[in-house]
Image (cartoon, rainbow, N blue to C red; front, side, top):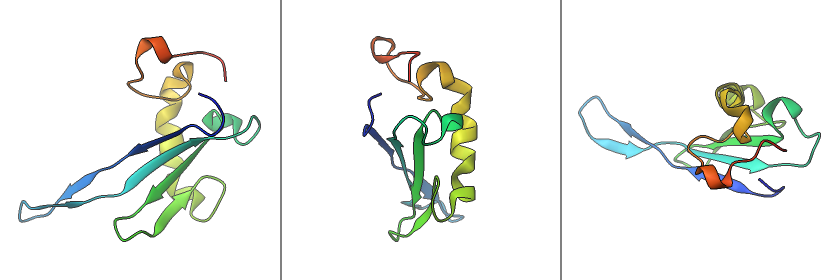
Length: 93
């Protein structure tokens, strides 16, 4: 993906009573080469339903979103992206 590309994934939670509620918004932003080679130069950010930022790679709460980079490293051969259609996949960063 080119520098500046962004992916966003919403989520929801299910309460003990079986009702649904908004969950965190997960955002990936492709950064410049050298930003974070370990994450394929992706910056991960988690925004809570109230608008507060739970964490962002290289910023406040960075440790809170390390699990994102850890999980996405399993698809480093697809630029750290899951479920990307084959015609858009590349092995170059």
